Length: 251
Image (cartoon, rainbow, N blue to C red; front, side):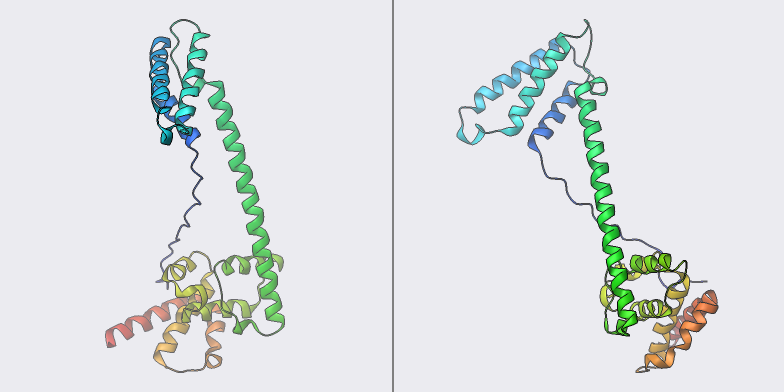
């Protein structure tokens, strides 16, 4: 069967992490220092001190956060190697300060992920409640879908033990076929193939082709499409693909 839309997901860009000049400075020093022995680190420390003295003469460089962080890190590494056995070279993988920072960053990231997941679950649950209320008020058709409504549909399905209201599926299929709401974005239509079940996708594909075949047709006259899609989704998908090929050949 030819699927109505390619099963391609559009990844959302991750939020950018705030720039931390001090953190960047420390990481630069650690990369440079990797493999250095005591004398090499001491020489690098002297260079950093020289640069700091030079920068202090210029007003625009006097408050160089990164530069101060780099100097402080060289000083720490100098002390670390001075206390280590002779011949020791610096390795950030065995630096307890670095490892503690990495562990703290990992925990902070995990906590942020958990908090984001809770917020997303709450948002989905609230939207599912809203869709349920719209169904009960018979006003769902007056609402355009928005990004994330596929997840709200799944939440309604979970709550009902595998059953979701037929009108929610029909509403999403109609919106997908007519490119309403967030489905105006072609990327959202493509992503729908990985977010909605086959009967909804087949229903949407058949609706789209029937509306092109019979311009101006009332959607109420196409209610049979939903029943067909529920009963034989693959066959309906094949029919929609066949109609699309016939239309392309006719044009």
